[in-house]
Image (cartoon, rainbow, N blue to C red; front, top):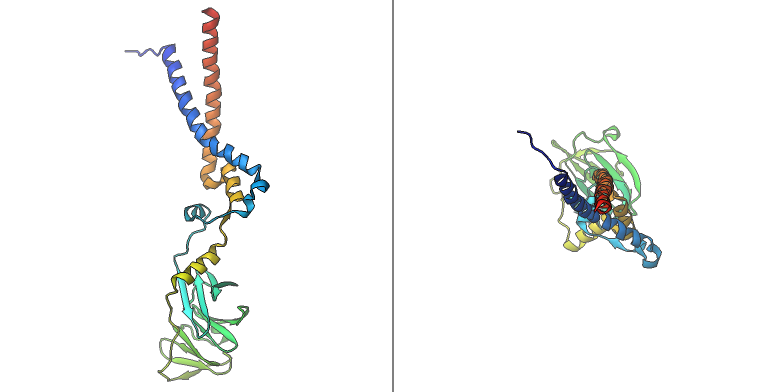
Length: 253
């Protein structure tokens, strides 16, 4: 049995989807229009000076809260590793590490244990040197300790000590050593570290520009633009079809 689709049914179908797609496109283009108006008055509203620190928004830009925080306390300083960024007293320095297994301070320098290498820093946080096995260090280092200018290293089989600024190492049998142990930072310090890591956040001007261009959706934006393009084409053709129908009806009515 052949199903006959009437001209009226086609017109009804096109008219129904004309409304639906028009509503969806209105939802798409309303943020574009509003953001465009605001961008046009960036200087008037000072949008570049307004910053957003809303975590779901930051996540869209890949600025996530790090889930790893390693924190050590010396006599007068704190040394932290948030993701790969090193902080001294909650201030970021120009140094990135994979791991922070221990951190100590001497009267003239910081010594950080990063995996199987030692990283020497000035008290201002400037890199002095990186020491590894080629400098005479053992292949496996478990922990580090310091007292004045004396540094101790713990290995799986023995202890090593240096009295000459890490130039040479000798075995020792001392058992009364306070090893560097990770600490839990206070809530206030953790908040400062996160604030330093994330910075001020995102400027409102940048967010509006990305909303206007669709870049805020990342790789999904091209599909949204595809839908908008095909939707507009559909509205043009169905709108013309419905107009032509009414025009012919009036002409012959």
